[in-house]
Length: 114
Length: 115
Image 1 (cartoon, each protein chain N blue to C red):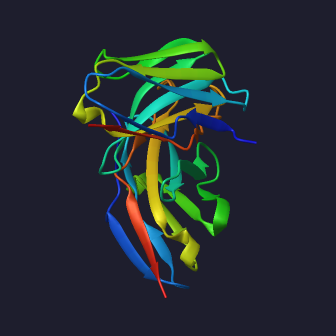
Image 2 (spheres, rainbow over the protein chains, first blue to last red):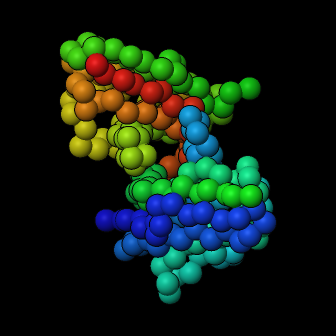
């Protein structure tokens, strides 16, 4: 069985500060990992994904994440927060042969303050 | 152009009623899904279809019945609605079940309120 833990249901940063959203996963097989963003009253938008290959992946809106197998982590970062980054962020894990079933974390609400 | 669309966006109904939510994708994807997002924003998969074939059927009450008339459409019919069915339902699609094209694209959601 797979699971995802997102540490911190609420994260608050100042505009211009580093954004770090934490995601740890559990998987008995090589995982595929995703970050999604959800703006209020909208669907989920894919930020970035890791399947195989380079462990540092870049996504949209200046976000990136690094797959660390030894730490079973896939933390999301952005060097400089912008007010428009305020949203709910979800980490998800899947695996090959899993019928493309994604297991989502419980989400992290990012607040950006002036 | 809307990639994954759902109708209706809002649905308010009384307990015991039957309702349907429709989903269409114009991405040419093979696989479609239904997710339920509860009031705490927890997302859980309900069903997935690949080329009209049911692939995933999580432990969902049999009052929920998905139907895929073709690979671009996946509808969700709910019988005898209960208060606990109130949630946001998301449709999603992905290119395929194999290879590395696992990313899923989500629709805007349907907010179902059962009174």
